[in-house]
Length: 140
Length: 409
Ligand SMILES: Cc1ncc(COP(=O)(O)O)c(C=O)c1O
View 1 (cartoon, chains in turn purple, orange):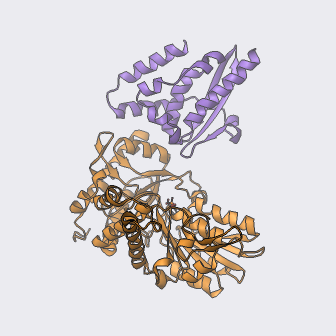
View 2 (tube, each protein chain N blue to C red):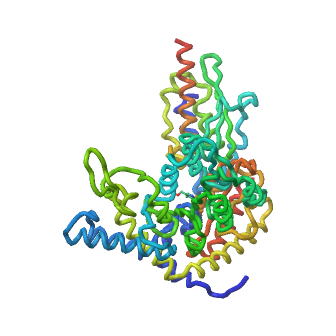
View 3 (cartoon, each protein chain N blue to C red):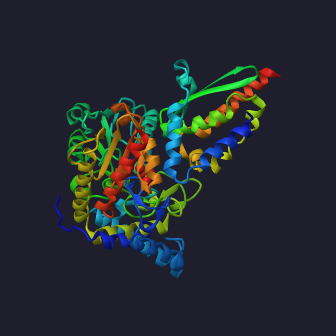
């Protein structure tokens, strides 16, 4: 699936919820099912320190596609990571570099991607893109 | 629980327009008072009146507005002097807040300290306030020593006694810990420091909103606080310093107001307090700070603190009845701050869900990383109460917390 298709799916899924409780419960459950980052990558080299929660990210490339794994110590942050990874992972580096995260507004989670939230997510998105840029240079 | 009416809280709540607000569709329950308190209409009116009627630069003009503004500003200084029982009004220096006051003193000691001298800070400090002392020690070659804390979240006074010696020049300690609410024995700390000839700076950011402070009785050399934690505006605070210190210490910043005569060869500094108040100050803020003190005194800090203790006891008892809740800090001798965690749940997650329910608490390390490291936790959830909070709000907080725990488990 393309990034745009995945985003549309996610927006669709969230449109089923008509209150914040269900939206957040869904996100918390997503957080619990996030495939964990391999323990050898859950190190300080891979950490993004938010003031509030920590995030770890790792990337690999296979068949010209970048695969991300990540983790966080906070479950809500982890839920959002699960959503972001679903969008960005297993895509071509160029598509990752060009993708935006506007769909997060549409599913009512905008506040979590605010730069002042200090949960590490904004830096994480930057990091995902940095990985994509690095892998793109390898492809060229 | 007692039902003695200590305060007419319903009436008091009407003074605070922000308390009528909704957040995320729910009535706001504001429990982040240790970070910033809310502002009553009486103080807001003073701010509006200042800008509507007599906004002017002070201490410089012969015209009426300047005179009125100067008088109001100096009157505020006198109110603050009286409130803290300082001996002289020029012992009150307006600052931009606690942080500014601390830096002013740390800077003033730069040339007074030499290699081998010692500065003592406590393990319970706001970590940003440890930085000015680290910088001072780097500049002067003095050594920084730390009073350790105990598991109960109190200062280890025996260890403090052992740290003090004739090389000790300055002790810095907060009156009340913002992270745990611990009331530190500052009178004793000051006494012990004076015995070895060291000066003491007390950070009163968290004590001033909850108790009467008598700087002379404490015999503090320096005492600092911020107006925004005592129902005043942000960006204004005060430094109390004994006159003898203010005469001795060099000015912090150069600029207008702080000079009496300037030639290119030499500048003579102005009299106190102006020596330490360079540039156009936060005139409105100073006046509003005075109004905030009037507001608190009209209710009475003793009634305020008894009521807050009742709220604290009630909230503590309710929290302790929940499974998996761990409260950090002392059981007794603390102000209305509860720092806690829920087993296996990250504080950030709890804070995020409570916000969805209109409940404002603080989560994280509360600028007290050393305390978090001591307990080996990433942070805590902190609920802090002021006299305008109610038992009903505690109930809303507890039921919100139960809901959050259910969602997160
Ligand atoms: C104990 C303590 N000291 C200092 C400060 C800093 O105050 P301000 O930011 O107003 O300078 C605070 C406020 O968070 C505090 O709680």
